[in-house]
Structure formats: C-alpha cells, structure tokens
Length: 350
Image (cartoon, rainbow, N blue to C red; front, side, top):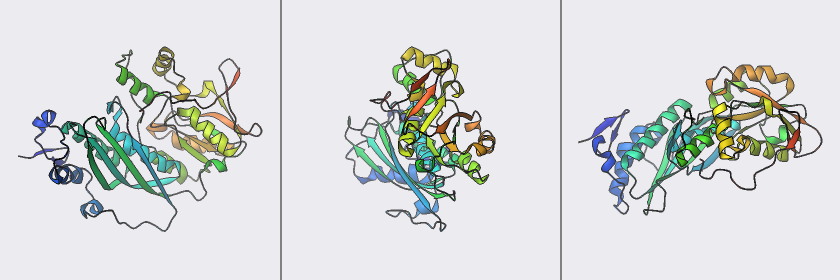
C-alpha cells in the first residue's frame, strides 16, 4: 500500500514512518524507491524526469552565475525552518547576491544509516515548498547512505545556476566612497533560534529564524533600474563579517550606526543573556546592499514592498581613508572598530 501526502507518493505508509529507519548496505532497491517514490514526485520537472546522469537545459545568451554550498545545521528542524528550506534558500540567496535570477538547483543528500524515514520525508517536503516559493527547479541530484554515527542524520549539498540581470558587475570592487549601506531587516534571529533549540532554552516569546528567499526583492530592486554596487547575504559571521569582508576587498572605510541597525527586543535580550554580540550572529534571510546616495530612496522604496525587507534601513556609509576598516558609532556617540571573530560564534549554524 502506498500513501500520498503533499502531492506525492511515499515509499512507506505514513503511519509507519516513525518506526522505519534508513538502512545502510541494502543495495540499490531502497535508493531507487527513494528516487522513484519520494524525490521524483516532490521535485517533478521535465529535466529530472529524463533520469539521466545530469540535467540538460537551454539558457538565454546572457551572463550566468553559479554557486554551491553544503548544509550541516544542528538541529535539523528549528523554529522558522529546517535543513531542507535552508539548503534551497541559502543557494538561491547566494545567486541573488550576484544579481542573478535563480533558475536551477542540484541537490546531494548524505543520509545516515538509521535515519527515520519520516524525517527525510519532512525535509524533502520542505525543499519542494521552498523551491516553489523561490521559483527554482531542482533538476538533478544524488543520494548516499553512510554508516551509523558518521552523518548526524542528514547533510545536504546544493548547487545553483542563475541568469545575471544586472548590466553592471555587482561585486565588492565596485563599492565607492559616498555609497550608502542598506540593511534589509532585523538581524540575529536565525542564530538565536538555532541556539535556543539546541540548548533547550525558553524565552518569553519563540524566536523564529529569518530563513527566506531573497531573489524576488533583489530582482525587483534591479528591475527598477537601481544602480547597485554590491550585495552580500549575512550568513555565517553575521553582519559584522560581511562588512569586514567587503571593506577589505574594496580597500575602503565602512562606517555604520548602531542605532540604525534593526534588532528585535527578544533577540537583543537573548544575546545579552548568552553573551553574544548580535553583529556576529548568523542570518538566513537578510542582506546588505551598497548603492550611491542618490539611489537610496529608490532602493528602500522597492525593498520595503516585500515582507522579507519591510524594515530595510540605511545603516551606514562608505568613506575614503583607513582602507579595510569597519567602525561603528555607538548609541552614545563613541566609535569602535568592528573586526572579524577569531573563531565561529555558533558552529553548525547552517
């Protein structure tokens, strides 16, 4: 008997899922079942249906963007997202930061022996939903099973291809003195959501990850003719690390205002309790963009029409002198240097 849910057929009846574990060394039959009954229906498209070693497709005669990333987040499920949504959105967002409309993704699953089948099913459902929301197709992939204790449940690798929609390069080298720095929304929620789930911490209100696709808002800003010099999503290392990377690459001085950075009170309080600096906490649905001062209102106007960037705000400016330096003016007017952390504040965050 086969069970159906969310528009696709599952290899095992749903009511048995909690008691069904992925087995290692079972030959190709289980892998084939996963492909035929779970992955193919969930990610259904003509390229995947060809059942070839790779996907072949036509693209417009334009510049392409290509990226890849791996996801090892712990725990697999957290408030506001899971490893599946993270894998899709993370790769979509990397393409968007290049000014590219994401089109196609590949996915590689590393599955640990003993993984409950319903866990995999939930992850696949989440990826299917995230891909539909982002307007991308998962067109090729691979599945491997590793020994028990060697994979921590699921690891996922995704790679993506997109078409660049910007006439001019979008890169740190184009950042110029006088540019304004626009932040798309509040920071720190993803990292704190993971930390709270991982450590069993309870706050007055649940802190939800900001995990979300950014391509729609980026494409809208570019379609308006906005001159965008650089963009960067704020994942590992948070806002601070992204700013330092761009300052060093552009050889310019970035100055930000602490009071201008959106931060919810529950994240601020959680960071104070845990001893974290929110500038370094990871995000999965936030980005910064560098635009000439004259483009500020156009960029903000377009960004704020999208829920994911409704709180977009100018947080700083680019200055000459002191190449590679990032400074922040505090709420009381003092200035401090913002540097890279010597280590990662929160490991296994994405």
